[in-house]
Image (cartoon, rainbow, N blue to C red; front, side, top):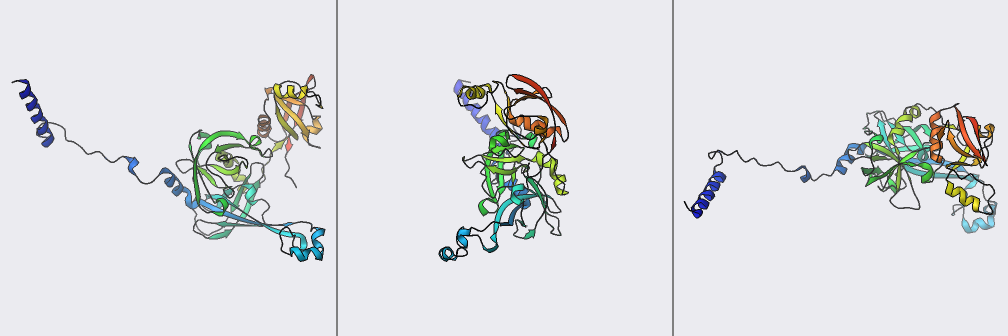
Length: 381
């Protein structure tokens, strides 16, 4: 058999296998199932479906009293501006302010988690469910330091709840889905990623908080506050809480594990105790200290070390009682080096109330040990 004949015989065999593979002794050809990617639904839609009914809108009202402007009390000027004109304080000096935010149900009995700044000092709280029904909300607990609050509604029925994830498992680059009611636009969803983790509240520009945020580029706008930040599985990993007014595409969320720590206390109406020393602080580096020292108008010479500079001491505070002074540099607590203000703040927060902390302090060219006993941070009046 020549080469051409062999080639023709092989082609005939291939045709036989294709037409009748079982008789030729070959395994049957099985059709492959369609790939999962062919589904028309996205993971975002699935995640939102999982939590959608548990996300609520929160409307608030509060009345504030202001002293009327004597200028506007003159009948001559009121003729031009009118009683309801812009900037005119109504009779009695009272003004009604309205606010709006978001929240999500964490217990089927109607327990809702949101931001403290959404409901704090509100005279009335109204909760709107996704189906349009509204209920009066009772503020059970507020913690301004962590910007968290718990609201309770009574509907007489079992409500859908949000599934809470584990924010300790979140990684930079993970998907982030923000759900809420920004600018009064109910049931809005935005998508982004987790940009970074453990962003301190001091660096964000809100030093009166004690938080380490999840930073995301998912769009967060006014009205999103208190709403959930989700992972790709539709689990809550954070509470949307803040944006940078001078930047685009940068938002911040409170890690949900932080909320898990204090939510039970807030739901019971209990205060969250936070220890404090009573110092206003800033991170100091040798470079910053040298810049200060090279300035002929500097009012104090700073040690050129890494540490935390005391820029102010609160009167009648534990720090004041212990003898801490403005211009002191704290370099260690209980022999653990301190190199950043947020590190000091975190150590004080973790120390608990009535704890004795031994501070290593540089004052001028001297180093000394000062013992400070933490006390409870009181809310502002």
